[in-house]
Image 1 (cartoon, one colour):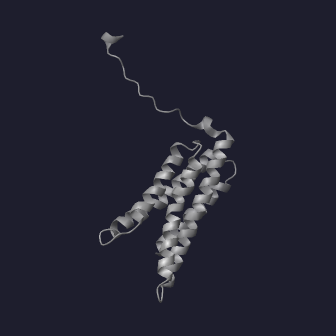
Image 2 (cartoon, one colour):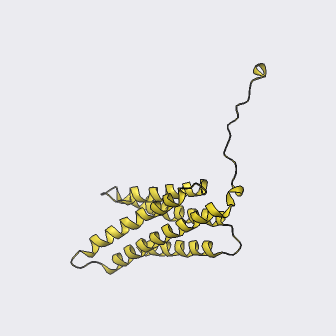
Image 3 (cartoon, rainbow, N blue to C red):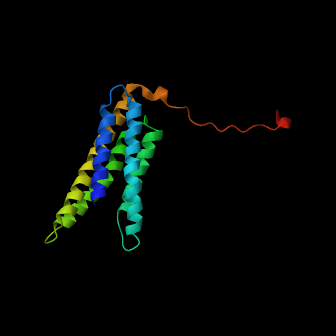
Amino acid sequence: MVFGAALALSVIVSALVALLSPGASSLRRTRAHAAFVCTLAAPFFAWSIYLNLTGFDSGIVVFPVAAASACMQIYRPTWRRQRWVTFFGCLVPCVAYAGGLAVVALQSSPPALLLTYMAVAAVSWLALSIIGFVLCCRVETAGDATDLPAPIEIVVPLSPDRR
């Protein structure tokens, strides 16, 4: 649990550094944010796979959704609806942690460390969703789309007799 809280805090700090770094384009900041989200989601997804061996853990669904929204943010940052995909993709883990926090808090004597972990994780994912939304809004209006590579074209070479 301490590892998870430390990882979440380090990702938030890294995302803030990317957001506030001088001289970086908004496209670069957006892609850095997406990389942070994927980096954060991957170990928690692996842990939820382990937890699902004995019972259901919502992380098996929640973290791939966040990672998928981040992958879309990397490859299509100027898509008009990407800001909402990023926002809700990162909000899904926040809601899951807030729900877990509510369930654990209703116990007769909830463990303080678990409550702290879930609260930090919920706030971290909320911050990541808001930061992602802001960054995606800036990419769309900043004119950074010229830095994007052209879509991949599939070229089928013609045989010599077809030319």
